[in-house]
Length: 331
Image (cartoon, rainbow, N blue to C red; front, top):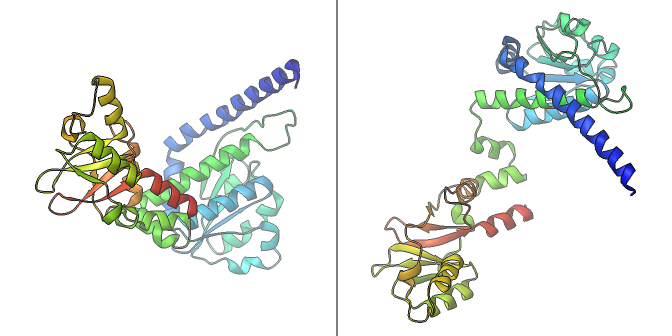
């Protein structure tokens, strides 16, 4: 690709990014105001299902919002406005809540649903860029983003509005499941056959290396012997125990490299002279997700393994980050 064309494309991309960022900045005052809190309160108070509807790109965003609500514990379904007026309105119940998306607030197909939801006294939350529109005026709560200027050479192609509605939907979904106290265990029930369910129910004991696969040496073991143990167990580390079998440290590849840098010869050294004291540990019943977070968020920098201790402080397993990642890929 020639340089002038590449520069033109980069300039266009920067203009689009600026427009998208400007659209998202409109959400900050919106979420700080009373209407956002009122919308979340209506969603929390809903005793039926959340009926999500929209036309075109707004409808596609609405489908994703409905799916995210369902996956985090809020009953929801997407109803296409055209299908609704041809019989699917029978799905709607008086206990439901309507969440309607329309940039203009004047989508004809969507407005046809208003008489039905009004007759059933279903509260409407509107996501729109025109609060003074027909939809905005009819809604119980109107989340008015303000004017949204689409980016790109074709002004009629939805871009900024799609991004803003998508993020606003994320904000609503997150606020609702946070307010309801939905946690990892709840997600496991909601996703029993999916990746989320498998990962949040998985415990350290399910993936840890134990028994003959657990690398272990004494503190007075020579470094040569320790290296053989590490190579045989293929974890890049070994647990280190004292005379009573209690954990007193770990020896890692990093410890060996530092020892070789500091000492002319490592043959005379024993493990206790170069090991890492006070290694990071984890309980066997802990969730793998929390173990991964502990490894990645370690204050001294990311680590790749945690030692699993029994009630007596003796190592009974090692959980390695690579095993967690491999399981996630298989899932």
